[in-house]
Length: 343
Image 1 (cartoon, rainbow, N blue to C red):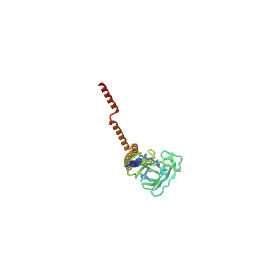
Image 2 (image 1 turned 120 degrees about the horizontal axis):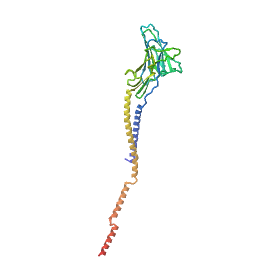
Image 3 (image 1 turned 45 degrees about the vertical axis):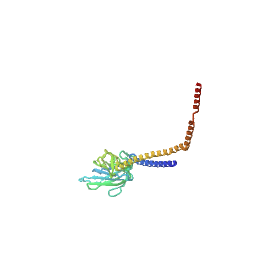
């Protein structure tokens, strides 16, 4: 095989090794980059507030809010259930008139219906320039009246629908939820001429996350979850003692986490292959570059020329050593002359 063909073969192998190194290195980087993502973040989801109108509500009010825990959706499904259990011996059957407020992000593009299928209409509070520590700017709140009526011991109203507010966000195998809390409306602020009062003593509100991913493993909750395995928070609505404006939950999606660990293992293996291919590419390239240089150095004296030089040197050496040396002959003549004189 000629020198040119050998060099061409080395260059071809070096290019192939370089392609393998770049391909496997890129794949390893992409797999590792998918897991090297920051912790997901989410904006404040807003707050839900409940108020009674002119102390019409005499029995405790129970407010239960559910948010759908599906991830990767554009809108959040939500349900607000308002209950009131009347004293069966009470003479008054006056309906309880309440106001439901949505403040902040949860009020964006909200679309709810009541239990009879009627669309819930929302109004602005017109409270510009007023800020509450729990609710934020009251100008960003909308409200709708709710009536709990009937002579039955148990009264209920259900508002269900969706909102454009995002209550979840994911990054790789991590997920975070931010759910609006239920709090009492500050009674010092009247709304559009309506005098509001505090909810009856014993009123409670709770927020629950329903239909979360089946592989969700909660790792952090603020505040802590009261019941293990139940994604639900509760607080009193007759005071601001336990009021929170939002609930947060962080966790890992176990199936995604397992897939991510597998990808990291494959990324490490591909990185090793890429490193080996790169070393092989360098060896082939250096070998292909050094071979022509050694051939060029050897091309200065041909083998035939080297043999002819050695033959001439040997011939001259044999000629010099074939007869007696001149200085040896002169030494012999001088010895014979001294011998004659001695005689």
